[in-house]
Image (tube, rainbow, N blue to C red; front, side):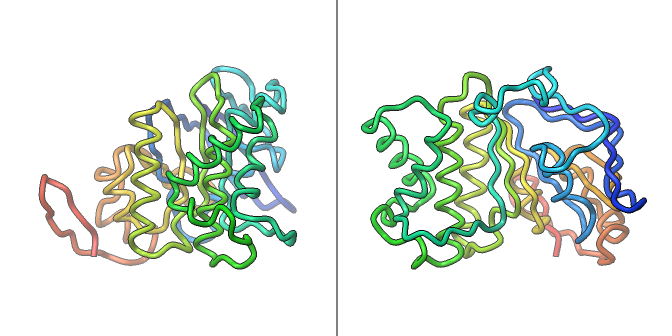
Length: 252
């Protein structure tokens, strides 16, 4: 689905990214992990073209630069940590902004928006003024918007989530990660999510990309990558490992 090779990005002679090889496939939920300043957000910007890097980025075996912008918008979506809107839009109107690259009638668009809002537990905000919502509610509204944006993808879409649980309470954190897992395993999407809670990665994700100083220091199954020594080396904290039901583990 997405492959990165020989990716490099520098600012004022400071190397911010140096990725030899990374790839993800359809039906895979990937956790992008690393300490603050590891290069996670920079990698997202490289994938979306917000910054220009040397190297090769391919999406569905085609250079991402060769995709038509409107076609790419139907297949690649990004949920940022926070989005600013100063207009007095309702929640439903914000979600409907995801219809811009699509071909849908007004009635079809309304159905798509309502479905996405149901999935993100925001339908009760359909007629609420967006600016009156909490940070977590706004974050879920924008997640619904991106779901609408990718709803007419002809190939498996890729969803990039930048700290999607950062403004959410405990229950909503798990609902969002469960939804992400469903998008991958039941609908064939690919999802890459920047996550800070390592136990979320262990519980929900199929694989992990671990960055440090702009480089990939490890990738693979979460339980393999997130060893006690690895966590200590990257985050400077040596956790205890707790055995849970069904063979799962947690770090405390």
